[in-house]
Length: 130
Image (cartoon, rainbow, N blue to C red):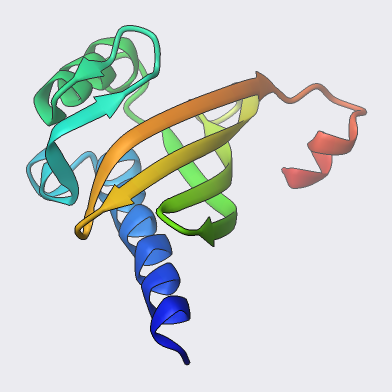
């Protein structure tokens, strides 16, 4: 592997480790160690700073849907960015969704995140993800 491919692999691993800690284990103390101090989450209401993202996620999702999970299905890394395509489940039996997240990495930490998502409807090509 080249130095560049090693860095890209490390960036994808960083994002995957953050997602596992944050979204699935809800281990927020560990999850914030992956984020830069000035981390900027561009998701509406999330704001700036690791703890603002934690507080926002707790209020909007984790407290209401303790079974929430995010499963990364694809990840692509280029330069300082990682794009993930993920399956989101709120709870058993609840409708699922897909999300595309864009993560910017600097100095071994996640510094920014953008996301878009949509629900999965029965009979659509996206339903094959389930």
